[in-house]
Length: 630
Image (cartoon, rainbow, N blue to C red; front, side, top):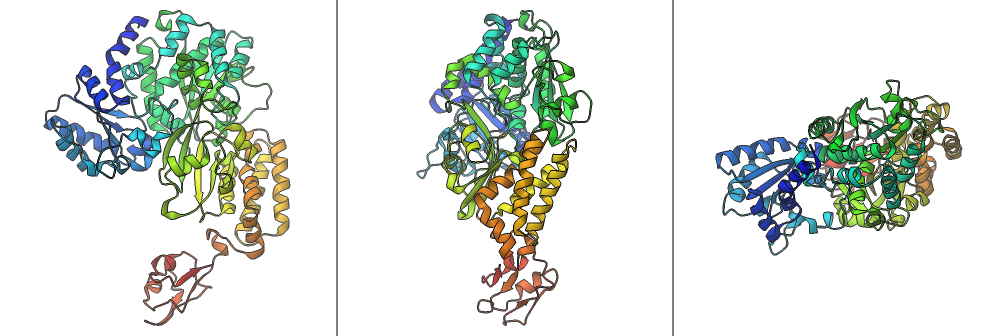
């Protein structure tokens, strides 16, 4: 297609997308231009799909057909962010936010709300959007969304990701058009550099500088690679972007190819992301059909194409040199650096590799200008950051906030606080490579430098919230189990070091620890950080070092007192029954799987500690608070 034809598509469907970005009076005016009285957007991301959102869509389509509502458009979108409330459905132009939908609920909404002259079904709404007086609050003004600024996620939950024309109407490929018609390769690199964009994959290396190195490298063949091998436990940021707006990544990679003189790109995505892979395949096919990938893009004489490569789930392949080795068809193992990929990368050719979130920021930077992006965030960390918020938090989901937003704002306001009235203990950021931020640092601004200063790191964006019942020694052990299992084994410090660290931590959690074990852990961690070949081994000790820094007493208690404050380490637990509180109801004895509890009816019971397997069923079943866990 020509630029004029693409612009015509953008103009034709722009109002359709604009209705979804505004609500109420303005939305109602725009709706008249679209030919649709109502638009119903249902999340089709992995989170909501696992909660059967596809069945919700099927019922909606059936009900709309039966009711002959030809002026109602049903759209399957990407992630809205509030994953704990899925399946999510939003009806425009009102912006009515329905949560935890079922097919039955969908039928009710169709018959009550979607019909002409219908009304919102308030009891099915996300209750955060219903004020005390019964009026509806726009969901963008709720605590979860109010402090967010969606740049990378701008089109997620807004467009149908399998419809390229909706992506075009929402602004995708606007930057590519601008680049190919009015900017030189140096102009593009200078704009990205001036924006202050740093790699969102974890290291935070300046993106423009990486591109400039690749452009300056000599070679007729160069490559552009997208790292979509998101392997951190609890992380789903990149997956959500690919599922909700795959075209933004294709566009950004094409722009990078133009900037450095590359004509081929690869997206390395893990095979465990079937929805993301499927939508990427559709997006690439559509982009080729519309002349946005392939030969002579937009008639401007530039050629660039993209292929997908599936990863087998090896965590180490998130490291850029291991990823490139895997694309080449070899076992995914890291290479020594230098030379860096920008000089000698894929097939020994100059290569730039960025992760999905980094690519998702390119379009807004080109369209709005570097100065606009640089004003967001902090002086050294420009823009926004996407986090996968999980763990002991009310609002589990995907959030995007300006750099510099404090941890307190994320946990207490956006996240809705800790469930059950529990106390916030720590936030684990950066996955297996990161560290734990203790409650005393809850007012720390979240940016690259601030997190490094307190012993943690940004990482790719996983943020696991921990409460007072979590054991920090056990948390460290969990991440060491992961990295020990995922080590590729190429270098001795990582291959042996992770296993030895895990042995020491296991020894401590089993009540067999000795004071000198902490000295061994710190010495071994130091050696691993200095001598491991890649970032997996270099950063594997980080969770232990950060918890030792802020929660050392828990390690000491495990070793000296044989006590786990969180009640997590089974080997250190004991259960007993307070005879003063026990009523002899026998409920604990009847539920004990090993018959370790004995006693007569209406008499105090006793636990035989030699038989007890510490399953905790007695504690869970006692209605009188007589069972004590020590």
